[in-house]
Image (cartoon, rainbow, N blue to C red; front, side, top):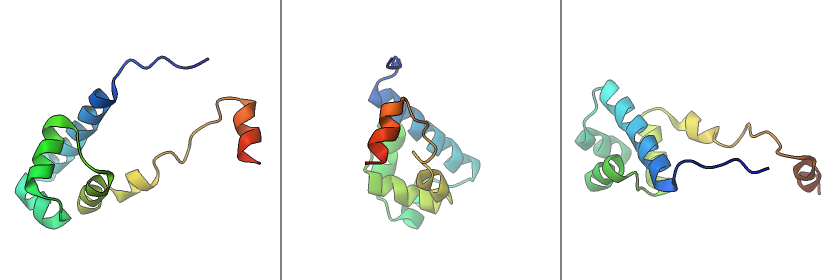
Length: 92
């Protein structure tokens, strides 16, 4: 049985952006400074924090600049199987 999704993709993106913004603020890094150290434009960082929209490459650069690259590296690494068919499909 499929799990019900209660959030839209946009809502999930905004929550992610909020968490990244909170980490940036906790470390006393301005958006301008983050743009400088990450190589991501100030406009992209500002848009990301407001809308949640950003390219994967830019998100990776931001994570690296905030010393959070391991969180991205570990994304989707500990996903349990949903059913036996997934186990069979993986071993083909």
